[in-house]
Image (cartoon, rainbow, N blue to C red; front, side, top):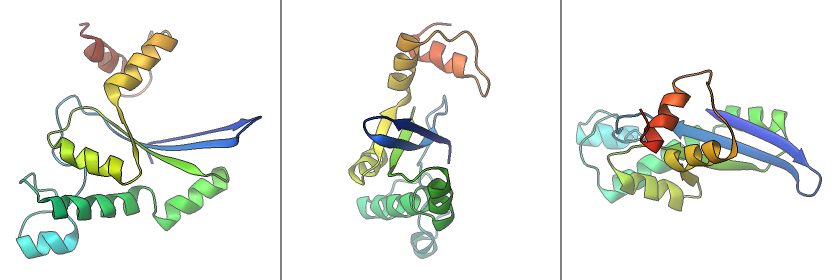
Length: 146
């Protein structure tokens, strides 16, 4: 769980967000791993960057969603924090296989582009510095600043 956000609103009640983030400056290969049975059958490593069929992509995305959002331990943790319902969101930057991200979105996960998130942050707040890994560098990268 990369980011969990909770707030109680007077009108809507609990607003609960579960956000996974894949935001490397360099394009990543696949976000998902090959399912174990597909890897065994094909002889490929689970993290293989070789082109996948649509069926393989869909199976990998299903497994990824089960691991990231539906794992019983994670669900229990989320319900301890707030009653939900919890959103399912993914923030991505550069990817080599956008069709995988499309399938993730089709599977009920809200996909956000890092550039859009950073644009909104920059528009709404003043970022002079940040704790963590190079948020200000990412803001500069997204705007073309050096």
